[in-house]
Length: 343
Ligand SMILES: Nc1ncnc2c1ncn2[C@@H]1O[C@H](COP(=O)(O)OP(=O)(O)OP(=O)(O)O)[C@@H](O)[C@H]1O
Image (cartoon, rainbow, N blue to C red; front, side, top):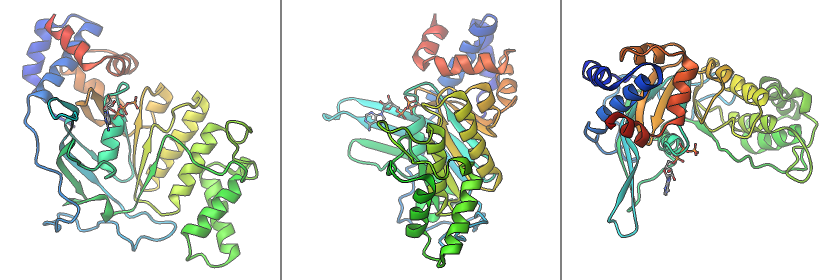
């Protein structure tokens, strides 16, 4: 868990905070202040840099099996800072500020925060999808199984917000074609059919296996089923790590829960699962093992989900239920928190 200067922050809170909502705003603002004043980290290790000493050499590589066992991957990052300068390089905007955390195999990590807080940016940085450029500056440290490393060291899947499918194919046809293209090791038709049937079962797609995917004009499978189909396609590469950007966006409560159940199951199967999520319902939140709370690119909390965030904020003299805590953190901008603290 991220350890803030608890005692100092606690003093600030007790000086300015009242009860309930006021106190929690003060605590979060104080935590943010602490984060903002800590220094930037070293540059991200470039992809071609030779690997350094390793505490754990078990980095998942190409030898991972096509199906079944997942090679365990732990990703650690520290002091990730991402800034964007304007065309004239006169002003710089920080998208991420000294963000640290960890994602472990067998656990589902949710990156949470209000809109624009940097969730997708962090997800892209962790997945190696965001490259430094003359305008985009990235610094910090990213480790895979204890080694400074890039995403090339392990197999990963990235499930994006938009799903791209051929609307006139059925779910089964979509998976069969994907298996044909991605799994040349499965030589016989029977083997491929069995593989596809297993995937349909695992992802809860049996009942819609022979339904067309559809699109905006012709109704097909539901949004949640589409998201699970995306996951099924991605799973063919036997990824150790699954990144999912806002997997529940646009889904109703039932479908959102089913998608998160799938991600939870994949984590339990040994994958390291990292998703970004805007405002999860309680039932969805209950499926997370770990969370990262961001506000305006700054880290508010990183650690176990469930009751631990409450215990963490209770160090600042707060006693709110989880629903209220999340509501406030996820709906309040850092600048509002700062304003409140200084008022
Ligand atoms: N390439 C870019 N150029 C300019 N601004 C960017 C770029 N990438 C991200 N941003 C800005 O950085 C901030 C964080 O964006 P990001 O997409 O990470 O937020 P988010 O928390 O995922 O938001 P949402 O929940 O709305 O998807 C936003 O204000 C966004 O406009």
